Image (cartoon, rainbow, N blue to C red; front, side, top):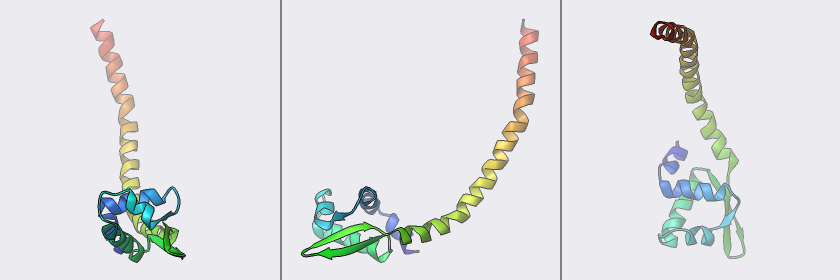
Length: 115
């Protein structure tokens, strides 16, 4: 899945975080990094190829924005893992719920004997 490869890089994740606040021209994105504009351009290309961002041309500028469709595919894939953890966390919650009354009763008994 190209999206996971794209998300593996912290600079690309930072670009996505920036774009989550709204669209930006490539020059403005590049200005926020301490790497070359060419390197930022390569990161944007990877994000575009992974369908996490889309670009439109306005005169000489390229405007980038998040592509919800790319995130939908990623979200669908992650759903399996959410279910995996949901089942386990629900079981843990139930076990803690079942054990809590016994612990409370034991603590109360101990308090009576300590008095």
